[in-house]
Length: 234
Image (cartoon, rainbow, N blue to C red; front, side, top):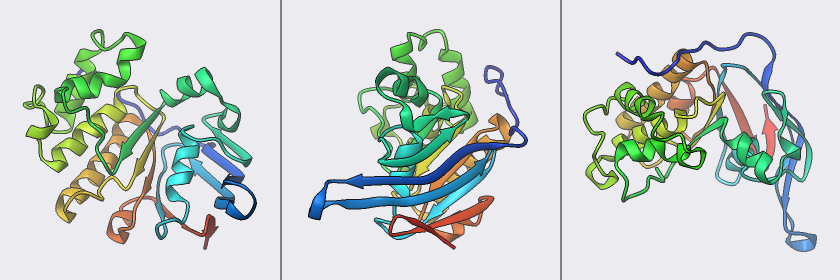
């Protein structure tokens, strides 16, 4: 039983994420590439949304902007009441600590144990030792309580992604952004990873945006938003 992690519930009413005419351009002149072209998106607190579309449609760019990993070229973006589009430097870094990231490539540190990988986001805050119990509880929650000391190379792909999910949750984020989290997994393992992410919504009240090419996975979420050529399509 998990004891150290506070449970939550989806917050009722209002939008957790609100993008209006959100635009991202790279380059200039004839070399300019429009990655996002006036995207409008509203996501309710606690909602789970699948982003679908072909490669280059803007899915990853949208997640990067919501996570303050990149800066929009135009439009507005608010997450949890924060004007994300205006964040720079240390303010953007503080905001990113309120967001959980799960990627297709697991991005685990090969020399660190499963537990230390989960605790890695807390090291800059000097909270890793104080919140070690949280990391242990999260690994128990994702079914890896007996692999705390295992290195990434000693874990299967599905187990590594479960470590990555625990790491994404260690800061108790309001929003989790998952970019093709099943892309390197077989279909059965991938379905289990998505089920795990969805169970986190019920336990922690997190809002989930998940980019995927897989219709079967997308159908598990509350709704699907489709993108093509940097635009939301109906």
